[in-house]
Length: 238
Image (cartoon, rainbow, N blue to C red; front, top):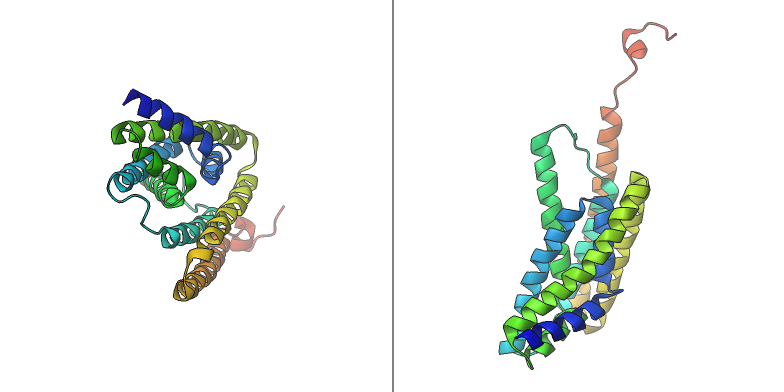
């Protein structure tokens, strides 16, 4: 088991360096609290890798992952629009703040879970499971990926403390769009004709829906801006 842990840790840690998941971790950490991002990554990594060792132990690598990868790409587009829209919530409302924290945690879990399904780290974990103890592979691969993403989180948190909020939002939006395009490009060659049509329609609906949400949010924010007191009372300003 110890041999499986060490080998899996080394393989997944090296494979994760420079991977899109590490860039995603940096992006999330630049915008949200680092401990929420790290907790979400840990949970999603544990789930993905237990699924990986299960596949490697029982079925090998026979399950196709193109559709899952396409879903992950669309999810990245949703996160991009969500990031660009921003949060129109008051910081002094504790209940609202708790909901925001919970939504970020769930978003990180779902983003990394979908992004890692079919990724090279998952395939590496499946392969390692066919040769080593499954529990050791699960522990080692999970710790290896979390360790690699923790480095990215540290960089993202540092950038987040140095950059303006709007600059972070714009940068995160661009990166999420890039992640989405990356994942969709990976999935596209393996999709059949029907799968490509469905994926194209879903992407188009996501883009249109995201633009409409952003437009509505801007309109609501504009209407919520209070008028100057002098303009309301009709008295001339000083």
